[in-house]
Amino acid sequence: MTVISWTDDRVEQLKKLWEAGLSASQIAAELGNITRNAVIGKVHRLGLSGRAKSPSSAAPRQRKARPAQHMMRISRPVSRGNTALAHAFEVEAEPDPVAYDNVVPMSQRLTLLELNESTCHWPVGDPGSADFFFCGGKALGGLPYCAHHSRVAYQPASDRRRGSRPAK
Image (cartoon, rainbow, N blue to C red; front, side):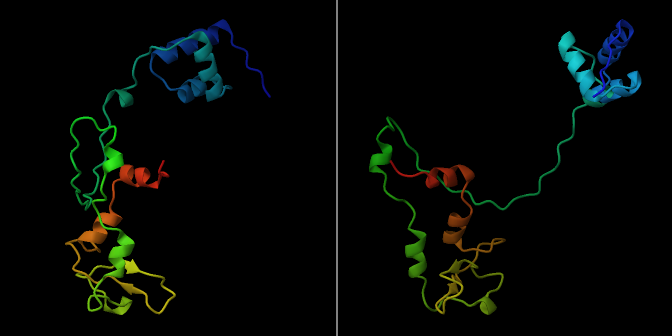
């Protein structure tokens, strides 16, 4: 391990470079024979905080354009008044997906080879069993699932987290 001696000259040069807006890496290169982390440590010990912004950091960064996502909006029930006991009297609004899967009409059920862009690709059952099938309902535009399975598949993250907690 090399011990770095901070002479008064080096400290003054460090302060000037820091206030000029140079990065710790740039200062280390300018001072020579010193690491970026040594510069950061010395700046911290000296209590240097305010400094001029470098030209690159003064300009706001452009945000990356995000591709349009096909999200399905789900309306939520509105609660008014005291909601302390709301969960005690809540009625399940959506049908149980397992129960729904058991009532997919026989004529609607499809095999892998029968699927196309306009049919629901939701798998039902164990793929290794003989009674495995796909929902086969009418798929929503641009999505691989029917309206029911889209509600199941595309839940907001907050709802998924809320649903995974054990009931008290």
